[in-house]
Length: 282
Image (cartoon, rainbow, N blue to C red; front, top):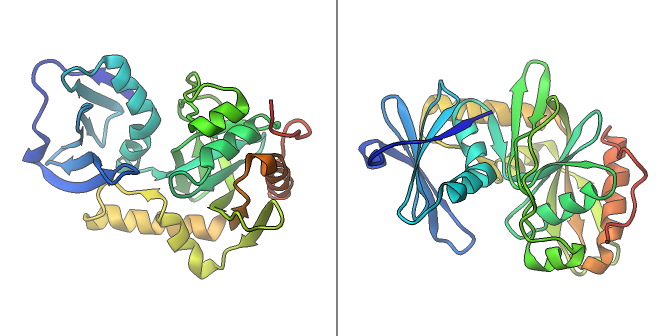
């Protein structure tokens, strides 16, 4: 959807605009800041570089920080920045992994480390196509809520990579296929005390909006127009897409049972595996 190019000369000074957002990593360190000017918008990532874009264009300009390669810039852009930039351009973006079947998409939201990537990767080995790893872009319209495929590289934590016998960072998966309806959303929670592998509970409609926006990107929440669009779109998503709390046992020895439970439940929402699902082990 977006085209990354590299700027020449000195990067622009994002601080000439209005700072609208700050993003932090799992350790609480600032990993990016968002700025808005009269026409341009910027994301400044310490140690990585500066990204500049216009809401009316699909071209994103990047200036690498000293010592940063263009390949490193492109990797970070592909993995984490595209969803946030697309949200500023009129889409919505969830901090989520996702799987796709022929007729629809199931998304997995949750805090960092809850297992979104692991579960989506395991389901990708069980008859589904993994559609997203850490950022899912959706379009909300009068015809429904649709998930759009972006290029992404599945990224597993070391323990999960060892379990699957895969590298921590898998090769890039190119975008492909037509947009598909988002048919179900799972909000993940680990519970090592569960007697069974997984438990599912549909969220009360009054709780859905709060559960979703906790895991949503909003580039400029301080602008009334953007904030209104953000709220209206997530109210529409909450009304159109069933959202379930998925509590599961985090042990890898129980992962195959979790995959079975999620696959069986997703199929009732119209997201059925292309082939019979199998245990998610090598």
